[in-house]
Amino acid sequence: MCEQRIPQNAALYQTIVDTVDTGRDVRFTTMRGEAFTNDAGTLVLHVFAHGAYHRGQIAQNIRRVGGDVADSDYFVFKMNR
Image (cartoon, rainbow, N blue to C red; front, side):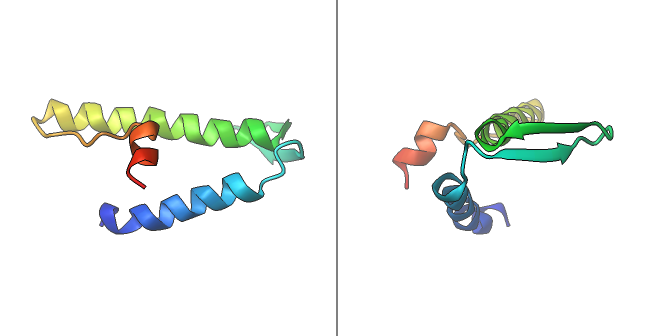
């Protein structure tokens, strides 16, 4: 299931990188209900960084049960495209 989504996710990330006006302000509300405005570049960076955080959590849980963890490093991703 996950392997089938890799090409789709890669294409969507590339679309974001290619088309987002990183200097544009974006208004948003956090899950706590707090309103903020930030530039799109900062938000895109957050999405990538937060994804790494969750990949680390997943890897930790897989290792905990004795599984092998795939390399999810961004540079490895770029080299294998």
